[in-house]
View 1 (cartoon, rainbow, N blue to C red):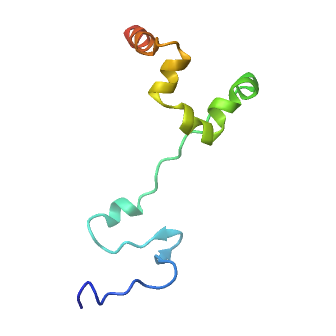
View 2 (cartoon, rainbow, N blue to C red):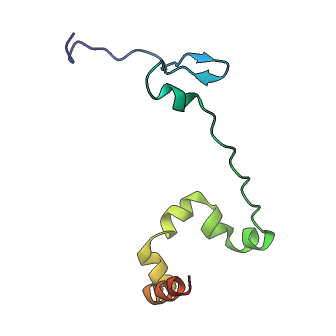
Length: 92
C-alpha cells in the first residue's frame, strides 16, 4: 500500500480507553502515559481593581495578542522599554 493509495479514515479518530485512561499499547511510553499528572495549583483570583482598570488590555485575548509586542510596549513607554527592562532585571 503506497502513500497515494492510503485514504484518511472518515470521522474523528478514537483512542480506546480503559477506566478513563488512554490505551497506548505496551511500548516504552505506556508506563509514562498511564501515570497521572500531578494536580495543578489553582489560578490566583484576579483582583477587582485590575479587572476594572486593565481588562481591556490584559484580560481580552484579542487585545493581548495585539498589545503584547515589543514595538507596542516601547511606544507606550515612550521608547524606554529596553532601559526599564534592564533596570528591572538588574534588581532580580
